[in-house]
Length: 285
Ligand code: AMP
Image (cartoon, rainbow, N blue to C red; front, top):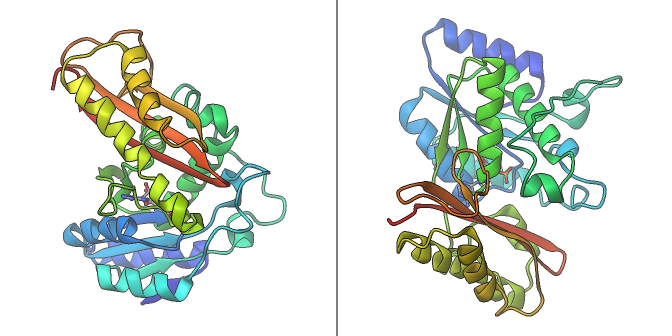
């Protein structure tokens, strides 16, 4: 495994690869990799000569009371996971390398960043947009792959790339789940055995909302009530939002038209662990 830790070193490596005609796929991550990340690396490796997996826990996308300090890390295991999935290069810069002394630049995207996560994690998407732009400038891949698990993040990244005219294709790959439906996440390690069982309620709530929407129920209130009813089965679950919105704009009309693509999104906390999940579907199926 080739491990690169500086922006300049990464750019020089990319230049060399491009000069010799290689195509480059890139999978940005915060490490502590699981099967969801591995599926992105595999998808990239299946269509590119080289896949660069970045591992960087980005401090600027965490709020002051969030889990930056205790975010799980296991670099050795990550190297093995990337290798098994077909990745050959890891870009793992330090915080000082990405944000050196005097660093003063941030990217702020309006609109798509406002609802949902934007309301509960102020500044989060400024951190995401800025670090993704920096990673894309360092790695200069032909394609960058993201997971549908972080649906709003994919909307933000697509907006970033369109608005700045960055020369990269953004691809979104499906959410990988545990056998009982829980979306894989590095943060699932925080869950106690009891909470791990309770956490499946997000999947069940989304499935209930999806089946209603696919039956043709078009009222966002009705679909959201169905999801909240299921979520209320877990008494100590604290729901930040359970929303039905348009899949492309994340806007929330009171009623959707038949045949319209929507996304259902849930964020909820179990103890100190915050879980997010989502599913897309079409009104009327
Ligand atoms: P993270 O390390 O959590 O920042 O995630 C890095 C990338 O992996 C992002 O594009 C995530 O959306 C994606 N990802 C995380 N969990 C999953 C999952 N369960 N299925 C598919 N992609 C995922």
